[in-house]
Length: 169
Image 1 (tube, helix red, strand yellow):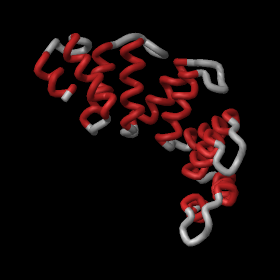
Image 2: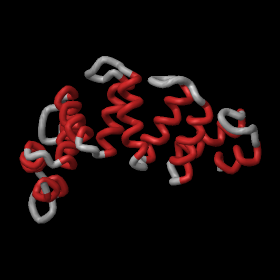
Image 3: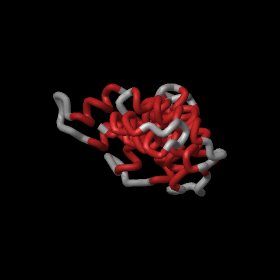
């Protein structure tokens, strides 16, 4: 796994994405969750291997099933967008929820938006506010802006223009 990063970053060796992919793949095939996520990323961007969204999803899902938060969020996003898999907001919600519960800020933000829009779950502005707040308080900029909107319009929270301004700022 570490040799993959050495070749990926060109540390004391020439940068070589194909060799990096080879080392990441060896670790991924042995069940290393972080390596599985990196292999998914390589297939997504075509780093050292041809782009292949189906293979990317397969590796992200393997890492997600092991409890890795970032791949869980990615799997959720893939289901929400229907990229290479049938669009399924219920599955998207479940995967994002798993990552959000681990403190993954982007997943918390996405979960809040899903509650706000009623995608994969019943619309619930109070829960939307709860999840968006968690990410906003950790500094996630998209959530901070969304929290401003929620305060401005009184969605899931009493309308409060001063708090809206604070979060917009």
